[in-house]
Length: 358
Image (cartoon, rainbow, N blue to C red; front, side):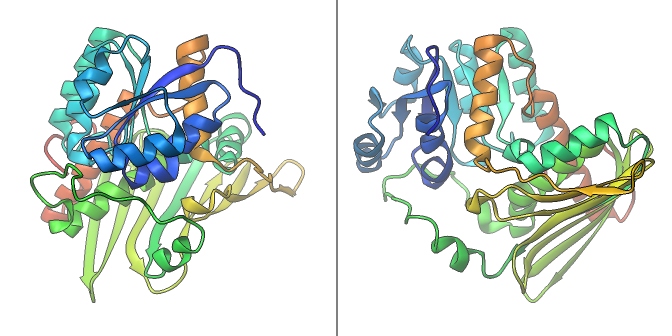
């Protein structure tokens, strides 16, 4: 049982759909330094069910009403991708800090507009790249920064499984849904190539950046067969590291995610699990100096709660932001847009100056 701290960040959660139910509402209840103060959803039945289950102090059917509440200090934006930027901007302009689900946006231009508001308000915005709070990946990054020396090459893969829902349905409660739920004007899954890149590629790109730094150029190929999509992305990093990213949706096997990283003073091999198992990545770190492997346990695998606690620490205590910030969110969207352009043209594409939609 996590002991609650005396001063806790008062959170308002926008959206009571599956991602809020599976990740954010519970995280607010369990976090040591945050409270679920308010929830907001346009669907009255869903709002009532979640209010009865999680017992926030306030339940709002109107987002503007929640933003006018002076007790709400920060907002978690847990709704469809196409609403992320506009809802985050409204929260920032109302004086609220923001933790926004990934991807931060669907085009470079809209995220650049959000960046201007973040800089103007001086408020904290964090992107929900919760894998940065996987204890195994944190241990890997510590080794990279403190002992590994120069990096040589990264191979990273994110392969969704045809059996993922069979497996996750065994461990998750059924999400509560509503026919009154507010949906985007266009079906996000109408273009699966774009949908899979935004939903899954955003994780792969951010993990690569978390480990190896800025991506400067990509050259991508895409194969579409039997309803499956596979991107192979040749990646260049600013520090000279070479990379290969494999995004495949979906493989005819178990969930397959991880990376291999080779450096001057050692190597790292990692296996990452489906996030809904709340299990830290298995990370095997080899140190050349003593020819020894080590493998951290990472017992606390609740990445969503840990990212919220990091977000709250930044706001309440001035701690250095550990999660992805507005610059990381923008860089991720730029990289995905560059991958899409490279697939279209067959050419290498520069990432830092990339514009346009994913």
